[in-house]
Length: 266
Image (cartoon, rainbow, N blue to C red; front, side, top):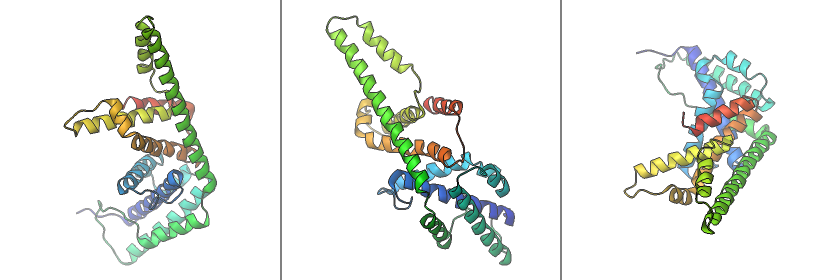
């Protein structure tokens, strides 16, 4: 059996602490509370944590960097993230030293879990230095993106209604076909649009694969509108978190590339 080196154990504990901090911020953005109590549904709480850990692990390149490299890559992040880094490193050093003193041997594939004392220290950090300003900025940007999508959705409905009315009054049927074709081939109009489209597509596939009676896209969207919106919000907020917290400042071209990747399921 392969065993984990003490330095690797320290690195993994540090990473887990940083991810715990990210989960708590994400929970505050979505519901104004910490991730452990922000969701009434256990399933949605688990989904939020999994999305946050997967996204932030990739965004901060935690699987491929040592602690010093992660600290260097986050050197321009906001003050609260620097506080998270300092606490995560302190917890990791303490746990690594305890493991060394006790001559603990841990399997290389052992999952790292934070103890109650570790989480209490993180809770205290959030209590003492709550990142309210950044949380509000992330939440406002996410809400604005949703409102913009609602406005665009209404504009699409209006354009289709006008085209349909023209056909009903004796106009050229091609008018409606052209309107539908433009919508179908426009591609993603924004990052939020791409995320909503992808979440909807996955919901349609999932429901029809597990249902005896296939449902139309319209029926699925109507019956699952709230969950589709919640999932899309969870994902979009992560991009705003990375940007506002200074973890990764996305350029216009990067956002465009991300939107296309998500929209087309690449």
